[in-house]
Length: 592
Image (cartoon, rainbow, N blue to C red; front, side, top):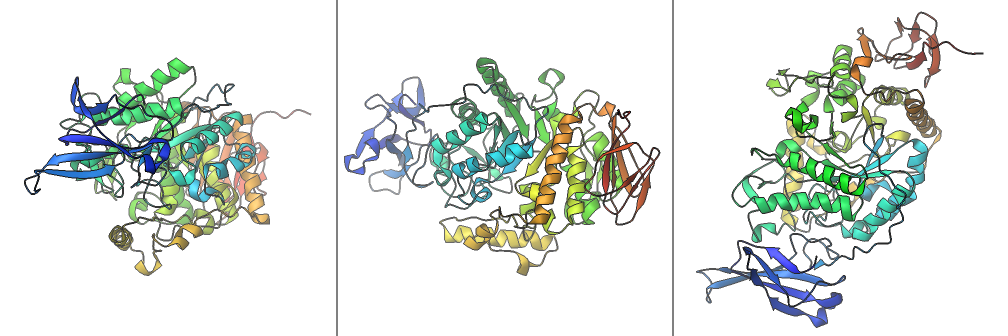
């Protein structure tokens, strides 16, 4: 930031409230002038921003109700604030970007071949900070993780939140360690060979501390279900689009972030000729070309739309990857037997085999849950499997359950490792959710700490309505505002013997994925077969066979056993699997 300036088309006049060096006793109020080239931008040449300065903007708007004809509002944080040390309602702070980076040897990681690990900074470690994550990086390296994906770290109301209620989309939550803490984490991760992905929300703003609407048309009316729709294509939307694109570029350049996960892109109201997702892809490619370090963009979408990861030349958006719920749903429903809400379209081996082979289960087929046709056909001979991120669970699939219970709290160790093997021995890009690698027994529940009591009440009531409509007992729903809900969700890093065995299985599976060449992304190189109990993935020299039932079964694939969590019987012609067992076998000749 070279000058103090702000886009404020809703204001008649704007003043800067400045605390030089953060000293409130030296407070100054400076009237800003309209930029001669942009009448809706207010700026000043009287003072220059210095690291550590605290500041906000006072807005004046005409009003017939005011005795003087003008209403004064604020001070408000800068919409482009990079730091909110006193929270979302406080003054903004000027950030010093002269950080002593130690990652000069980092050459980046392209997405193919990576293993992602999704984590929530506040619950991942006892400290609940970026520095707490740094303390666990060696655990992740030993596990086989190559990239961590941080749930959103933008500022939110209070100190407890998933992060999807973020405001000040260029800033970093102070409670986690602020901008410098995030840089320390990225620097430490890179020096250990781990990339960092940032989960970002651009489809709505959080409900507390959201002052951007006082400055200009950042939203356009209507609701995403989580908040008001961001104005990406309405009147005066150019500045809002730039607000998002500049945030992406800031993370990639100033924070050395390797990738961005774009939350719920189906909620972006963007019907223009050049979608913002395409522009986001262009930002990543430009920074990649200028720095020589790979950057990747990952979309979350529930639309089963291959255009997200189709090249721009072929009519797509040019993103690098997208989350794939269908494989998760098929695997979860099959192993747990759950078929409520969106699991109604899943639950047998044929559906799992279809998902593993075709990525999308619904490719313009009728969805019972949605009560309409859904999805679009994917050409698996053109788009490689590593553009699709798969998982046994995520923050959504755990935290949006009534009690935030993990699969590891409901399944046996054998079932847990079967699910993991299905994902990690497939050709897709795998992602773990924090704690699953050791069968965590702590839940991951939905928690907030808004300062507005009415907002807390509405949030709790909304969760109750949501779970009641899904058939869950409202008495079982934890109050998201209670601190105990958050504390229950913190990982317990004290492992028992069973958890140690699960952890060793995860390490082995991820090692085998690398050493056996099972990250080959072309689905045409894999043959999937099944019967009512088992599914097999033939990867050439290696074959995965899994029994997704509580009964013994014989699978017509044999060879030499490479790995199993249990003790299946493998012959030259077949494999006998007990309940929920799997085996990775090879048909390669053994040498003596």
